[in-house]
Length: 319
Image (cartoon, rainbow, N blue to C red; front, side):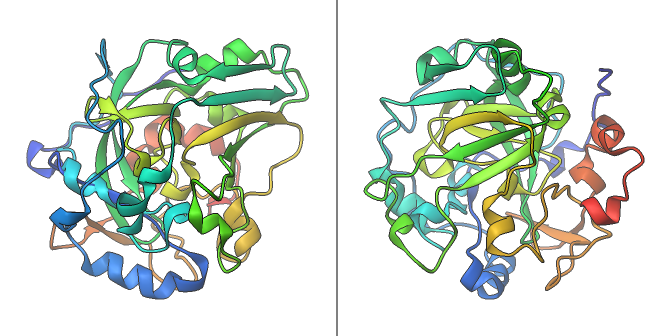
């Protein structure tokens, strides 16, 4: 597949190294979305506290697929995000995710594949050279960041798995353990465990990665340790965290947000400024750390690379 290099962006637009964290809960979406618009930085007392935060990753390569924008500061990336297994506001994950134990950890690859296998996390990290991928992240709540992820292409794992001809989709599942993830005990939140999915051609796209770190360090707990999906042209909730299972299936998976609110969250969830959320506009976004809003880019700015995946589809319907 021919991949075009994203258009260059001024260095002044790149978000610094200290900014990122959190998403939204179904029962409090309107209030949280308003807070997301108002909040620009995270308090110092909410800095990451997980055990392996700060551990450097070796032999990280630079990727030509990175955008030329300033990354959001690390403090904000790890202090302001959505991880509903640890709370429904933007700051709870950084406060409570220390209960997550990212080692030992394994990821089961199963379903319609010739080579099913359970990978230890350290074995998984050796499937392909790890790279720094500086990507935009666009939350469905209309805030955004720029994050220097560390990871490897998802298609490296797919090649090892050797999907059969029946595999049309890839289903991803987060850890289910209420002792480690206390919000999973709640009855007024999502259906647990958290499940997401991609069409198999989307999963094979070179931009889709499995992230194991950010800013050159091990992935903090609140950002989805020890491994998460990153699909930069889709809204952030598609990039599922703390993955324990990757299953190749014939039928489209029923995802967590589709189950919670199918009228507002579809399967594809590609970033599209022309299609509003039923309760707010998607035409603009607030980059964390900036005062003024900026226009949202179709496919989050990755249209040259991914638009061909949806050729012939009604994009207003499938976004």
